[in-house]
Image (cartoon, rainbow, N blue to C red):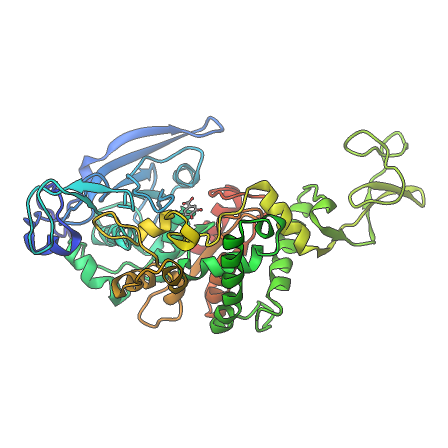
Length: 516
Ligand code: DHB
């Protein structure tokens, strides 16, 4: 049965979010016309073609504040049914606004179409999005002609949750099964994906969603795919310094920045203790054993890559087993040559072939240890460290505002400190409204909250040389989920920088498994 199908959503130009519910002409309703789809074809990188139907510019709220962003696009491949799983791919990056785009052959959106999934690409407001006020609203302190920032926290998340509610609202009219939504995003988009996964149906968002004119539906999802999530922003600075404080580059930083780094590093152990995380083997993690756990995750990732044939250089700090692994002798019976074409000189080196007892053996099949100092210095040699603090930078040691300082700013375009430490160092006031927004934007706060319907399945990846946030951030997210009984597939993906939508064969096998 059709639900509310009225006229197209009116394009309304904004007042501030707080005022819109009262002052806006309420648009007639949400709309989806199954007959309005357009047939299209996508050519995949292998030359194969996917036929699909596109429905675009579907506004997911009735009180549209920013008509450039608050709509979604739906793409259903030929053969999709009411039971097909849905990939909701957010293209949020840098906490910026993200307009609803089209599926890309080279990323997870195109691959999902090829795999028979319905693809949904929502737009969302972000720290950069603005509209011009069309009338004065004295109560809200808004003047006609004033630039209004529409997308400060938690607007992007609210838009994405409204998009999920829209999919549920029209579930029976639209191809795809809204009970099988898999969210996917990278970096700030990975954070959004984690938030969609962790905050399902939580009442804290309800009044905000109602004010926007989101559908009165559930907004929980089945699975969350998070690539390098830039999340847990209120603790990411301490995690960063705890991990990277001892690297050469941090030690060589300006002395005020180094002092900040030292302060932040010292805060991480208490935070970690408060989380009461356990490693998968049951060990309680504390600052005393946590670096060993990070190390074990890096070794696990490198071993997986080595097993698949990657050359893991021991110069990065890895130590290999003494035992030799078997390698077939060359067909002409001669000494095998190293990949560089030179016979190995001197003693046995990891990965180098050796003659032994008439057969050729390869040394060091197992990675048995990692010098973390060496490895962390390697990571920061591939890309310079962020400053300290890495995120709540504004006014700390006279540094400029970061994107995250803008994210927590207000509709006037302010940027603000969002941690106690940042505010203290910048002699700024950390307001209750900012604290509330920081809380709403951290998935860690909802994983154990009985009022949230947390996604049962999680796929979390963070590159093993990604320094945009420190390894403890995705590790803690994964462990908190795991410790609370969720299905978690986590990896510090070997040799990956800050990036997403990789290893798609593996990802889509996982998606198939969890949506079947
Ligand atoms: C992103 C990267 C960052 O380093 C950051 O602080 C916030 C967002 C991003 O790529 O989305």
